[in-house]
Every structure is written in C-alpha cells, then in structure tokens.
Amino acid sequence: MFKREMKINFKSFLIWTLILIILFLVVFLMYPSIMNSENIQMMNEMLKVFPEEMLKAFNMDISNIDTAFGWLKTEGFVFVLLITGIYSGILGSNILLKEENDKTIEYLNSLPVTRKNIVISKILSSVIYIMLMILILGLFNFIGLSIIEDFDKKLFVLLSITPLFSSLVIFALCLLISTFTHKTRKTLGISLVIVFVSYFLQIISEMSETTEFLKYISIFTLADIRNVITDITINPIMILLTIILFVLFTIMTIIHYNEKELI
Amino acid sequence: MKKNSIIEIKNLTKYYGKIKGVKNLNLELKEGEIFGFIGPNGAGKSTTIRSIMNLINKTEGCVLIDGMEFNKDDVSVKEKIGYLPSEINLYDDFTVKEMLDYHESFYKKDIHKKRTELVEKLNLDEKKKIEDLSLGNLKKLGIVLALMHQPKILILDEPTSGLDPIMQNIFYDILKEEKKKGTTILYSTHILSEISKICDRVGIIKDGNLIKIEKIDEIIKNNLVFVTITSNEVNKIIDDLKIEIISKENNTIKFKNKSSHCELIKQLASYEIEKILIEEPTLEDIFLHYYEGEE
Image (cartoon, rainbow over all chains, first blue to last red; front, side):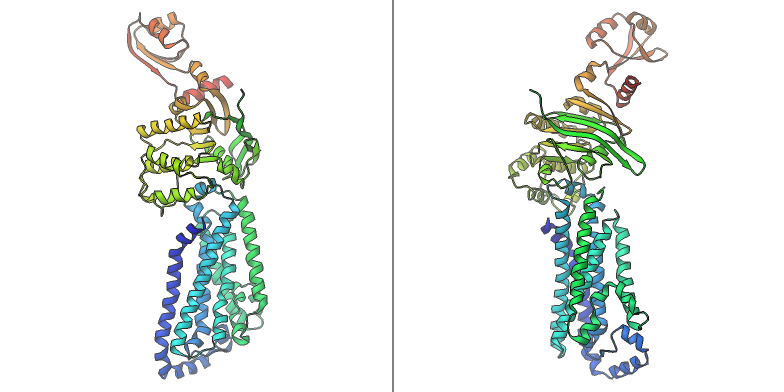
C-alpha cells in the first residue's frame, strides 16, 4: 500500500518541486546581472522609503536584497514556505479523501488492513515527499548560491530546514479536517485558507507589538525564519511544538477516521 | 448434521439522520448456503451489506462472523470475506495485472494459482488498463478480486449487472463450485430469476424491513406461478376449475396456479384456448403475495 501511495503521489510532487526549482533558477540566473548594475543602489534607496513595519514583515530590516542569499532570506523563503505549505495542505486534504471521492474506499476497506494502517501508510508517504521536496530544493539552492556568491552556509542549512515545521503541521491539520467531510473540494478550499490566513497573520504579527499576539495562531510561526536569521539557530521550542502538534493531529485523525462513515 | 451459522446479523438498524436505512434486521446464514437477498432499489440491501462490511456505522445491532463480532479492524475476519460491491471502482492508473498483484500483496497465503484459474475462466485480459475496461470486464475483475483469496464468505451486491448471458452462466458455475467447497454466499439482487437459479434460501427486504425468509423450494411450492388465459370460455373455465382470479379483462383472466402445470394443462385441454401464458412471478407479485400474507 505504501509503495502505491508513493507511486500515485509522485507526479504532483514532481510538479510542485519543479515549480519551486524553476522559480529559484530564474533568480540565480538574474541575480548576477542585477548585482552588477546600478539598479541595486536604486533599489536600496527605494526600500528606505518604505515604512519600517513593512520591511520587518518581509525580513528586509535584517537582510539586504543585494545578494541572492539576501533575497532568499527575505522573499525567497517566503515563497518556499508558501509553496511547500500549499503542497502539504493539498496533500493532507486529498490523500485520504481521494479514496472516498473515487469510491475506491469500498475496495480498500474490504482488504485485510486496518484503517489505522491505511492512515499511517498515507502519512508516511506524504511526510517523505514533503521532506524530499525541502531537501531537493535546499540542495538546488545550495548549489546555485555556491556558484554565484559566498554565503553563510550554516544559516542557509538552518533556513532550508524551517519550512519543514510549518509544512508538516499544515499537512497534519488538513488531514484531520479531511476526516470530517466527504468532499475534497471543501477541504482543498479550507487548506488554502489555512495557509494564506496563517501567512497573513504572520506578516501582520511582525509589523508591530500590538499585533504580535497574532503569531500564536499562525502555523508559519513554527518556521520562525526571522529568529533563525538573527540567532543563527533553530529554537528548540519550535521543533518540540511541531512534533507535539503533528503527533496530536495524527492521533486525532486516526481516531476520527476510525469512526468515519466511508460512503 | 446441523450446519453452523457463519454470518449472524442481530437487530441491525441503520438510520441516516432521521431516514431509515434498515430496521431491526435479523438474519442467519448457514455454512455452505447461497442466500438470496432480494428487494427493489432503495429497500436497504446495500445498507445492510455496507453495515456488514463496516463501511457505515450501525445505529444498533451487530454482525457475527463465525460466532465472533465483526469489528472494523478485524483483519483476520476480513481475510475470510470476499466482497463485490454493486458499483466497482478500482484504481484507474493500474493495469488489470497490477491491480491483481496489488490485491495479492495483502494476503499472506499464496493465492496466485486461484487468480490464474479465475482470470482464465472469465477470459480477462491482464494487460488492459483499468480505465479502459468496459463495465462487463470491470465486473469480471471485481469477481476475480472477490474470489481469488479463497474466502469462506462471499458478499455479492448485484454481481451480474453488466455481464453478458454467457458470462453470467460461467459466473453461476463458479458460485456453484464455491458452494460445494463450503463457501457461504450472500447474494443481493433485484432479479428474481437469478435467485431461483442458484440460491437455497431467499430473504425479501422492503422499506428497510426483512419481510420474509423462505426456502426457494417453498416459493415455488407456494403456487407462485401466474397463468394468463385468453379464451371465449373464460367464465366456464372459472366455474369448472374453481380458480381464484387476480384480474379479468374481457376474455382474459390472470390467476395463481395452485395445482401442478401438468394437471392444469390437462384440464385446460378441453377448452378452446386462444392464448396461454405461464410465467414466473415478478418481484412485485412476490411482494404482493407476502404482503397479503402479512396482513
């Protein structure tokens, strides 16, 4: 069953990974020419005009965008967070529900396999693909950056790992939500809302102290890019929180899926 | 020797919100019997079957398999069951071969020999992709999947829909062989002629209630054969033969035949008969008969 899960989810994994790789490829091809031009000066001047809150929201107060790594730290990782988040959300919404939508669940349910094992096989293959996406992208960016400039390798590795936390929790949450409905369309919508609302809350929370509390309800707080850039370390609390949330959602999924009417 | 109960359905009740699916259904299937489960669409056949298979949650009641309650995660019980749903939905990206390999991978025992035997009997092309299969071929694949692990119990929901008459006969032969081996079969259908061909007993379900369980021989014995005669002498026939007519229209009468066919034909030979039709009862006739009985 696990092998089948890997096989059927490979295509979407490939497409999403390619989207990210193409995006970064364009950046790596463009950056050397931007850096050599006078535009960068102009751009930095222009950024000074922006309010501080705005720059904070995009981590531009702690990083310049005059290098490719600088861009990665500000906007680049935001894309990675969003795209891996969306991919994980779609995967979570779809992976169990697909069997119900395609009505293949009637066959799968008749096989000598427990519902718990069905859920675990699907989670396992999804987690592997999410990790693989982040790993491949990290490697690609590492190679790309190495070719065009010098950069802080430790910071890069830490930053590359951070999307894993938010993605895993988004996946597990969407999977749990999917056990409450029979239609993929509904959960797909909800998963996208979760990702974008989380991202929006994260941006607002960083703008000022009065809105800071919002970060506690954003899944992207787990990725914690800002603190990783300033402290060059991953906050162990975020790792712990990710594990706790992931395990909690997984257990709730298994329990609720066991009670679910599958048809 | 008294045969053991393989499937026992006890007080099965299923409500979808306030809508009744089945109510207080009790049924016992003995080892090696083919039990026909008959009723019109929406009567509760599929609800019963889906409750047995734990696809849906029972509002009340339980299902015992081999004397043990069958719960969702009883893998060892699931191994004993072969299930053919009324609508077969399989993985479209697979070929028939891949689908059968996938099915094999779930069973510890070697089931390859049985698979080959069934594929040959049903003339199934393993190279075809599932998305390209016709309804009939999809049904054949469903049959192979339900039978290849040699289950002790077969649950078949309208198994012959989509099969051509030749394939239907091959399928009946397969079921008869399974019966000989002691396999118990729950055979759900709305086609009465199928039931009389292969079933030992029949349960009639309507509006979620199992209204009657009867042996097939009993149904046949119960005069459930209808005769329609068109003749100028219908009134004379009614008087002489003392038949209770169901309907009369001009020179045509319809009645339940209470004697043997042979005797009836002998009696009718002395009259001038324009048209005679001896027919099996339709599902409606059967229901009507049993409703009258109930009342």
